[in-house]
Image (cartoon, rainbow, N blue to C red; front, top):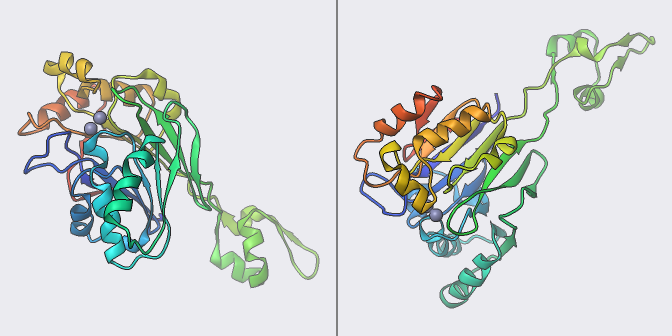
Length: 304
Ligand SMILES: [Zn+2]
Ligand SMILES: [Zn+2]
């Protein structure tokens, strides 16, 4: 299986503690790195995970609460000190550029690379990034300020060739790509070899959904239906359900209800309130509804 993993840099909520860092993670798709959220000190966690700064070209910011974006100016400044020349794209709602551009103009006058803010509408479920292998779209969420999660979807992959059959029929190198794309092979004496004899089906494309700060919000269910991995706001346990509602966050119970309704394969809980010295209480509450649930933890890697 080709590499598709999520590195957890921080999974605490607004108040940093010695246990948890602020929200940030990196989606690593075949060594292309995509950062989601950038709380304060994210760059230190990035270094601690031994990730390569030069492979990071896109940062997605879910919303403009400090615990999700205060790390941005520091990271951008450091990338300049490291001699970056490639463009860096920051995908965020329109106010992000209004907030951060003056800061960059003041503190990073000599920045040797361009920072390009790409605005999206957090109220819409829309495609905001696409390359040869991946699509990223927004997941509108329900929080105190405009907020979007992100759905990372691999594009359909090509079939695997069966090397022994390719050798047996002496398929020339020039036709391998066509075979991978589904073409039959015609031998020099006119015999048609069906594609199914030459290939085995491609791996199913994988999907990851990041649902940052949000109240319980059923409208996301069709968008995240069937994802391989769902990260969902789990700031509180059931005993704090009233507080969760007031602050527009979710409980473990609610995150698990969403995971179950959306038929996701695995749920990872995160954005933990500092009030829990041990989040096993959250895990137990969620697993009662959705057994395939795990707790996020800093400096760990979740493989899809
Ligand atoms: Zn937050
Ligand atoms: Zn927030």
